[in-house]
Length: 464
Image (cartoon, rainbow, N blue to C red; front, side, top):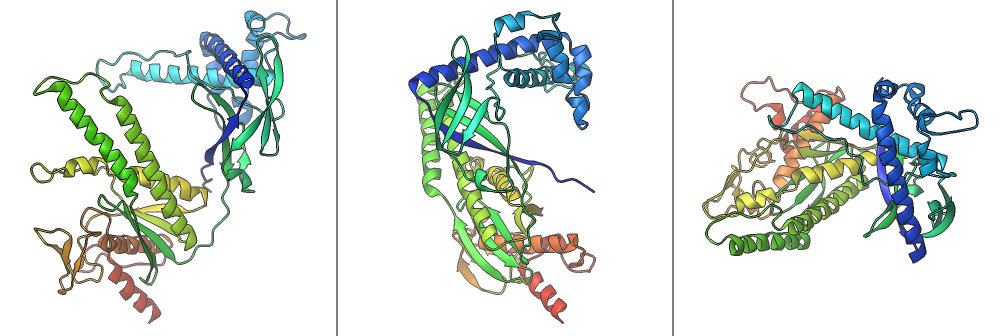
């Protein structure tokens, strides 16, 4: 029996430290990173003996042998007075045992990653022929992991007590929690060891949760999503009988305008910098691009959150997307900005964010063939013809005409969302072993090109 993948999600719990506590947090992170650098050197020196202890990741006793093996080299006790590296206890006096074990686990991960990458480089697995060998990076920006009871004590969800370093000794300090999310309220979520993240810009606890969603009893419908440019996402909830019970358009235009305005300023600054020729220096407008990437992440989270809310409201079996992996944009007419707009199409980001959010609730995301989802009319009348001068005007083969401002390929459109939902239903039905439309019949398109009308006919046949 295949075991389900463990779902780990991380919350950010904002802290409100005093100026004195900020100094303590900064000193704690500093001494923890020094310990990690020291341990990286020890573990790498003895990796031939220690590396085999981390080979088996499945058997817990075998994987847990690394920490005591490293401690035998550098941690002096009454039963172990003679060790090879006594400098560690002198340099890190009264270093808490659980901080030490967290640092050992982190340092071992750094060394293991380096050894693996270096072995691949030696074997010729390289991105470029002249790629330089990887380096062992001991100067890492890591943050201390906190173990419950030993490194932190949680007093409700308003205050946390953390063991910190004051320059000479390890003491406890209480700090207020000013902001947190809702994952701690879910009974099936298990709180794991958080990390203290402190730097010049932020101070918070990075709290991971092991999520175990309850088994769902969904209704006989799917939530179909058609992603596009003019409209970011069009949602259609389609039942197994072909009834559309909900439709919705999602388009955070304000955020998109903010992003496009910043990207437009890049071209203006580039023309002023280069003139009629020349090259831009490395890192040109890097801060603007970083801001645009953050705006894109915000758009992806807004859209994916609303998609999951709709699927949860109607208790859908699955969320259905088009399989757009490997899709590349094609240029439009001369002097058009179509190619540039395609680069702002967040098809992969929205799909990935939706899958992460929906999996946390126990749902599944499926993909269907993208061919002819928007070109075939959902009523089975054939292909949809577009007006060459105004692509928003669409005409069905039956003669029905309508304004398709929201349905122009490749933007999100209702016609495409209906067909995506129908293909998702057929895929679920075939997966569950209940049959489906055959693709072997002559003079019929393949069943992967199913339209909404095929659900109507298959539903009537089942009822008959």
